[in-house]
Image (cartoon, rainbow, N blue to C red; front, top):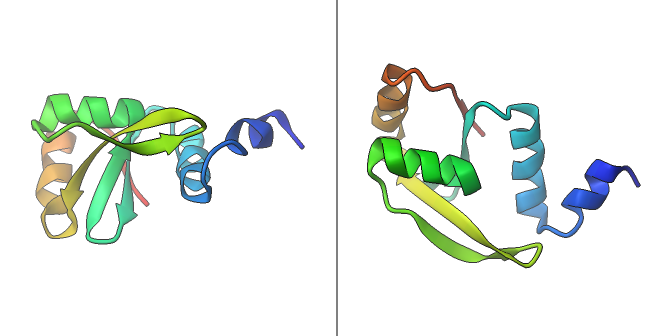
Length: 94
């Protein structure tokens, strides 16, 4: 098992997938589709909260730590993405 796999193995499968995407795009805000919402986690959630004035919360835990998250509804995501791009941010949608 590689060091990266060992690091991710303590997380849920969903969070492992998110963390792998984030590892490939560390300077990009990653919007991760969860049902009817796009969610951002950890530092991305904090940054989106600051820039978009969206609610910052925690949900459950992963690897024993609370998961900091923020989200936007799927039907409204384009307006949020446009605002971030206007601020000069890079975004990825997964």
